Amino acid sequence: MSKDVHIHETDGGTAGLGGGQLQDKGPQSAESAVKMFEGIRKKEIAEYEKDKDDPNIAGVEFPIIYEYYYFGDNTPEGKEFKMSFGIFEGTTWDIFQ
Image 1 (spheres, rainbow, N blue to C red):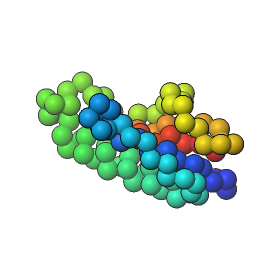
Image 2: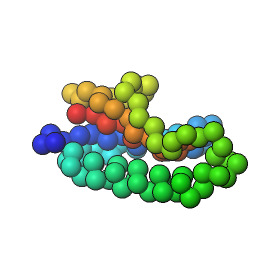
Image 3: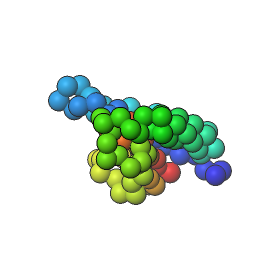
Image 4: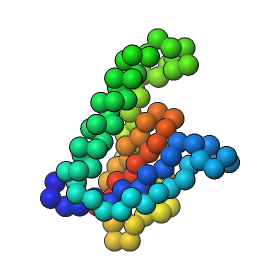
């Protein structure tokens, strides 16, 4: 975890309504990224557990999404895609190194 990562954040809004916007968060330490994502993951799981009987989220098995293929076309120069971390129907973070 000594090598910095580069983060792209895409909000989960509807693209035609101004959502789905990419924000380049730039480089940060891998350690700080891990801490950030772990905090988000714990919060989302706690909210899911509290609301899992809500019919609006029926069928959702797990609120966190991990992807290992990059569907975007905006790769930071000199960086390689590593993974995406996302919230079901919400924000996605693409991680490059």
